Image (tube, rainbow, N blue to C red; front, side):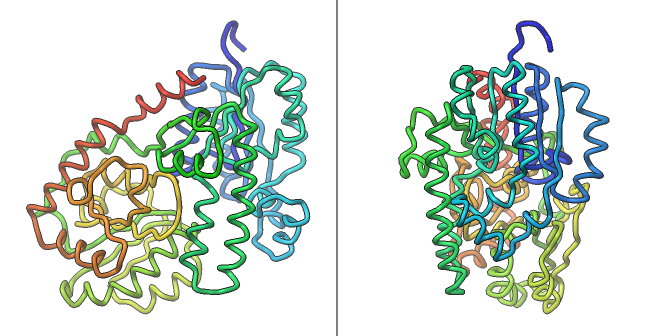
Length: 411
């Protein structure tokens, strides 16, 4: 610990390495920045065997710059989406996702650390982590430790939107009940925190609507791979008649959007562009998505791809057909950094201060979604306008330097 440097306890519900998803990218960027400015103490959960393997690389390359590091392995039985775990969450009166990310050893360690070490600021990365300090909130207040709750999404909104889009009546009811439980919990922990860091202005507006003090809410943008801006502009003639999706395929919003698009739009687009191909990049696809994809020709499920440049340069259109979710969508930020024109939904465009028809295309019904994809495939002039304008917007307004400067001012 260096003299006169603030000590930060950063608690995150996942290993922030490799930074390959929206959540891990911003967590990793924050940790990297904070470790250079402050005494950083990191505590995280390991959820998969892959996390355990990745942790050895993470420790070797980054942990030396931290004041301390501690990880805990999440119980697979607790993390599974079983009915028994849902019932246990009802008994304990916490949201299902909070229960699924609970770990008593981690809670005990954090309580011990706060009681026995100098801590100036606690950063709770994601609403899932508030549970680890909840029992000692009075001690934290007594020690005048500031609590910053980092909201990756307005979490309740994801469940509300999912309930509206779900056709299965049982799932719809369960999701609606969960949205109300999350809303109550989210409001409570926001009120107990000193400040709440939000990744988009939309999330701020929605948290205000449920009763969170607007003066507590601060915008700290979540961004993507800014180095994509350094690469040469894409050229229409160098692209092929193919579309691209990139995203974590274990996230229900991505799966729902892809199934909606494939079952309702793919055959219509193929009639207009017979040679069209669709590349879906992401790991851990569920069986229901694999089964649907197997019914269609020229839809290629690649799995995880480390270097995406080949696909960015080859594919003419990026799609992000999200029907529910919250926060800013890193997949869209990265596509705009690279300059591949996007067709997305209103929900997909949230958090990005761009205009439909200028920086991206927005369509919420399948007919418009299909039409705008076809426009970009065929119209070079419109394609070039969106490609150029999206990169220009990103260079001006969406840089990590700006985001981290805001975070430093807050601390």
